[in-house]
Image 1 (cartoon, rainbow, N blue to C red):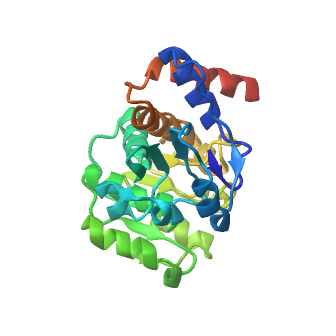
Image 2: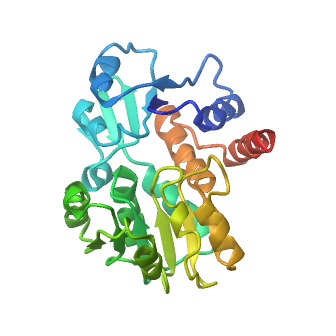
Length: 271
């Protein structure tokens, strides 16, 4: 797992549980603090013993630059969270989309009509693809500075999604009003950045997915839960995207049960 910061990541728990369940002796999964400027050099120094890399912020966009091939989904999203390393080179892919769809479906979502996305980074781009798969082609996207949402808008064009980008996150009261009536609210903001929206006037039919999972529950998730909303955690997304990563890197079907059990145990230890 590469990124910064990554020391809190539960990805090692999931991948190591998968390797054990699959009987992949000698496989290991480590965490390495890596910035954008460091990624190319790190990848260039890897040998044939490496099967792949999981990537988190701030590497999801620059991952495309170090890949030899890119999946159509990762290319359309404009971000990759996975590099598969093999004899044919480095292949970039995106399992965040699978993770988001899986987490929302686990919360009972089958179709989305009105969605709100918080943030405009690489995970928000994956959120656009996931929401399109669930039927929402015109989500509202709340950001701090619309002029910095250029890469998200480029991704939206490639995905044939038409987001309504609004620079309102600096005004918590206005932003909270825009959450009213949404089927799905999907926060891709860093830990703490959505706390001021916790007191929004939530509808109990709204499903809220906050990709942050440490600490959990976030203020946003807790506020929505008190109002009767169904809440999906970043842990749900993490599980589903990790299963897809394991399949890409190992060539074996991801052992969902073993991975979920390991994740649940790790969370209990946290609390």
